[in-house]
Amino acid sequence: DAMVIQNPRYQVTQFGKPVTLSCSQTLNHNVMYWYQQKSSQAPKLLFHYYDKDFNNEADTPDNFQSRRPNTSFCFLDIRSPGLGDAAMYLCATQGAYNEQFFGPGTRLTVL
Amino acid sequence: KNQVEQSPQSLIILEGKNCTLQCNYTVSPFSNLRWYKQDTGRGPVSLTIMTFSENTKSNGRYTATLDADTKQSSLHITASQLSDSASYICVVSPWGDYKLSFGAGTTVTVRA
Image (cartoon, rainbow over all chains, first blue to last red; front, side, top):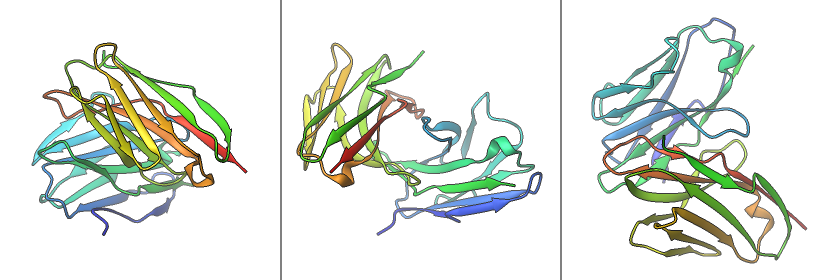
């Protein structure tokens, strides 16, 4: 059974057109992460939440925003996507005993 | 600065052969180390997790080792299969921090 679900799996948007990626989890984990992964590179942390406490990485562009309305859901908003934002976006969770799970990712294409 | 370095960057092996991937880290204080398998276009899937007191952990044909003194880990793949073709990522968790440190991954290609 899927435990970290990301929708959509593939997203195509136009340059400058806002887009929202979603992540949900059935694990009741406190910590949720959003990562950006470009081809053949390690995932790069954008944000993470401990419950509703939001932690933004210093080098995450202002163009990227996030919301976590409840434990189960987390959203990544890209306000004005540029060509350089085309990437795989990974959502992950971590539980109280350090168990970690990644979602299948959303592949974003910017035209 | 917490760093994780993996080697080799990529390797090609014949089906049925064994291979070993390396991971060196400087993350401190150390909590745990995981090996993930990431198929192209998919999210990473956990293979093993080890804390500082564990030296070895197996998951089927995958065996991970950890030397917390030298801050080195390895992942050994036995009797490789075509489905083992993927990127293998070493991820280290620091104690008391939720930020994970990722290696760049080793791309394994298994050929028939």
